[in-house]
Image: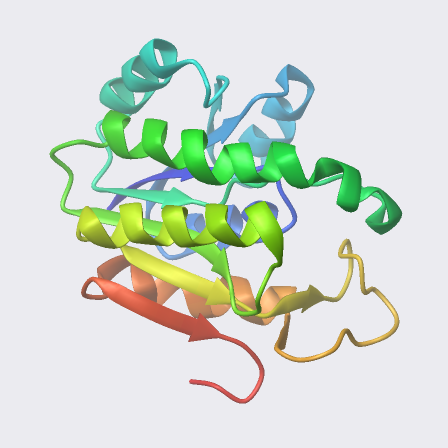
Amino acid sequence: MRVFVAGASGVIGVRLVPLLVADGHEVAGLTRSPGKAEHLRALGAEPVVCDVFDLDALSRAVASFAPDVVLHQLTDLPDAVARVPEMMAANARIRREGTRNLLAAAVGLERFVAQSVAWEIPGDGGIAVEEHERAVLDAGGVVVRYGRFYGPGTYHEVELPRPPRVHVDDAARRTLPLLSAPSGIVVVADGTR
């Protein structure tokens, strides 16, 4: 299967790419950062440097790779957890406009799998999550509601976050079968299967 991973250089994307490659898939890894392209190539992906907010460039990139499935793992979150509140608007924009653009670029594909969250987010961030999920489901896609990530490279490397939560490596592993799941919502968190 040809898999286009949007957000391939993110905390879960860098785990998904080698798992997909090891499973025999051909992978394109989307990042907006040119400095991350070589790392994606080393993981086994064909790097695609593109801004998800540039619909024309994104559409060309997706069409050029001709994927069987688009795996949406995009977020716009800072490296430091203390900065999350100030980045909420940027993350809401990814959920709204980024999702809309990815769906438009993937028009005609039968498979679209998108990251979401398994907990409530207050205010506009929560509204953006609802809009994002509705758009994915309306397009016949799969919404993956992850618990709060913990493990290396996450905000919770040492201490466990409050539930729902999931080790980021387990989240990546449990995402692979969802490439062929029917449309709907799947929760990926500790204690769920």
